[in-house]
Length: 233
Image (tube, rainbow, N blue to C red; front, side, top):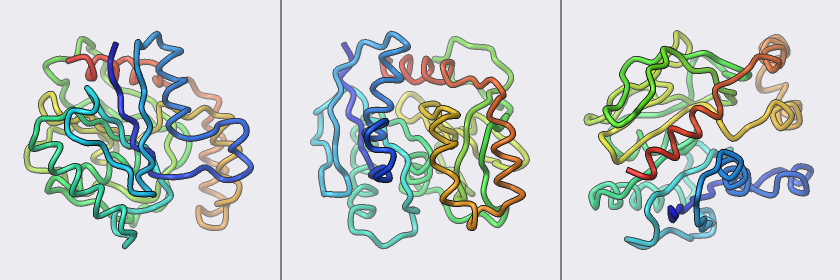
């Protein structure tokens, strides 16, 4: 049984709460469907909840509407927790905002991209497989929803996947960090309910292009198994 701490860095919109509850719950259900044997503990990071050393075997930082550059006090507190946990060789995974703040906190840089929003199913090429990963896939497809990107990796990081649109779509640091810009926990149905409220920000043309990709298969389950394998190292 893996003790997983999920650091929730956002609250869902009101109209999504009844069906999806929280990002942490979405991950818990996702891993359960894949057969993961987990004991899950949630941390409400926005309200100051952060793990103590040794609370769990592994941690996962969720997505968020916030950006790493925002001035919310919880963001700086989370960054400090990341640096301390990393120095203590804790195992940390990150998704979307979690991916960005891991990079940003550990010596890289994340910010708003001049390429605009990335939404829908995107394919990225696998550049380097971690030594612990028992998979020879050449590319992965995931659902994306982001306007920020990791623009520079931390010094110790290895690029895992990339595309022309998202150069640092995933990275890892030995057996301590595994991080993805895409969302393995998202379903097409969830994205279809999430994004219409953001059409003005995304732009009508890019929004339609992204939504038209949602009938494509993804490698969400594969990435879920990678994450479970990482947690068990």
